[in-house]
Length: 384
Image 1 (cartoon, one colour):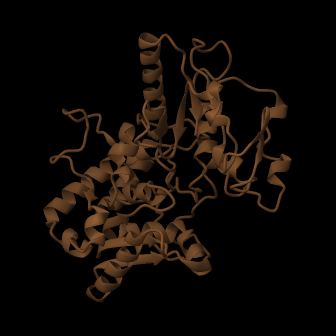
Image 2 (cartoon, helix red, strand yellow):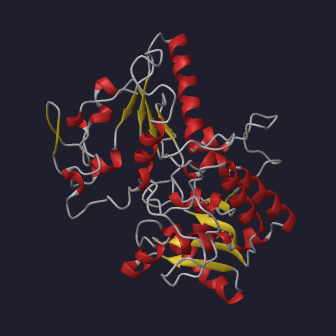
Image 3 (cartoon, one colour):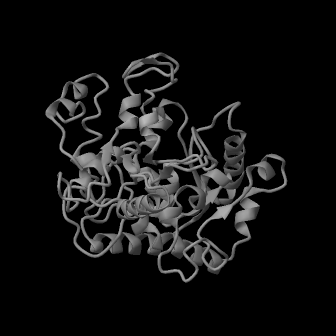
């Protein structure tokens, strides 16, 4: 990691980029993890969800991973020139922030002229960047050869010690779960019919008290769904959390489900952790390489085409799982929590635990080693 001259710090705190009416200074505070979420009993906002029981919880924006990653890299042992072997370079590219100033479908400036790329700029498709290993929140699972590798979206728990992680796991393990399944999201009329079917299934199940939901449609719904307390309270009260695709195949709430000990239910292959987050999904202690199998099941897959064609009913399918099966799946999801969270990027972590970023760095370095052996190339690791 190389320190650049100050003129390159266009997104640094205090710069003009943070003074516009669309400033995200508050969301990116505390090194990207956002404002502190206060424990139950310490809030004056009228929220009564008993969800935050200790320190380490923050109102983290789903697009903050670039900032969190950058701050965490500063804690690594060799962040300055001469500290490493010179074969790996970290390029902090804030893609989500880069997108904000531009209007999709318009020409945007880039080195060497204007690029009609739709959104943002064409940095990632330049010939010079094609040899980079790109870290994203979602990858194209059909791209070959693969150069984009997905990291989990950031959720709300950012511990500074292994004890905080254990406390969080114990809390979700002991939580009562009155809802069979739940869904938090908005409908997409004329676009994603599976969401309409999910709303219908939930509405039909409400009289039996089998479904809980947060409707994120409209202004009021959007505000409600931006509350980590309400979202995590719903998921912590549910056995299964439905995760249909939205703007893309991967949803931030899929990670929230894991952090809540709620069994995710996927409806498309490209939404599964096996396809998106396979660096983090696999269990390093598994004798079979950590891949999901019948004796390590932590999610449910329901083909959305079967739902849309009336071949499968969501409530009926989920009701078939016994209490013991549900408990076993939930325990596997809870065991994944350390591999899906991001430590507090401001402090040295107390305890021996590999989080999502540690796992990513290990995998990138291993991949670079393979590239050197087989192709003789030096791969550049690029942030998000």
